[in-house]
Image (cartoon, rainbow, N blue to C red; front, side):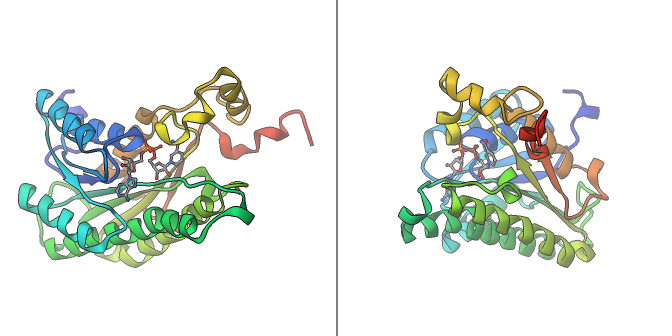
Length: 271
Ligand code: NAD
């Protein structure tokens, strides 16, 4: 990539849940775009360290950061470790997320709480630490970006599409959508930009059973007008744009990266 194509040059970014799937794709793409990247993992230490090495081999900068995003003390320690290594923070991508699916009548309180804890409280804890850091760095900072800081939250098309059998997940993402808008409204005057990405079906371990057999893939493709399953790189391109000065006037938006999944494809030739 030439300098002109390095829109995150000189910036420092934390990507949560970056040992796998969409987060790993974003971390890799951010490093190529010029950012130094904190690669957060919870259990995937080997994968996170392998990604750090890959980024080093390509001439980038990265550090692996173990932390459970639902644990306040671990989140604070993670931000401390990142600032110790890189000295400042410009971008947070709050991406960590899990599913624990069950028919509603059978869903346990533990399944409900764990998904809300990771997918929603985890985003709150990481965003709060990022905002504290941005505010401490201050408007006086002559940082590498027009904004004082940028936050990109990973939501889902299930912040608008109801999802039977996944009430905890859909509720967590609906919560993320409103968290993002409220933070954006509150923090814009501090020149902190908060936006969200809502992916459709992206080929990662979280939804393996939805694409790993030909029959499952055909059922999934019927929901995607654009006719293909998304890849982590599709989401990474959107994340680079939302984190870069190219989107400097974009505040409180949710960008749907879904091949048209939110366009009610069941209505094609129907209704
Ligand atoms: P994935 O399972 O490959 O990655 C999830 C990541 O989150 C992993 O790195 C995992 O280690 C991390 N994680 C899980 N619990 C954690 C915790 N307590 N603390 C820190 N990290 C934790 O799945 P993915 O598809 O890459 O999902 C990434 C995000 O994208 C999630 O928020 C998910 O809800 C969202 N999303 C995915 C899709 C899709 O189709 N794949 C669609 C919409 C939204």
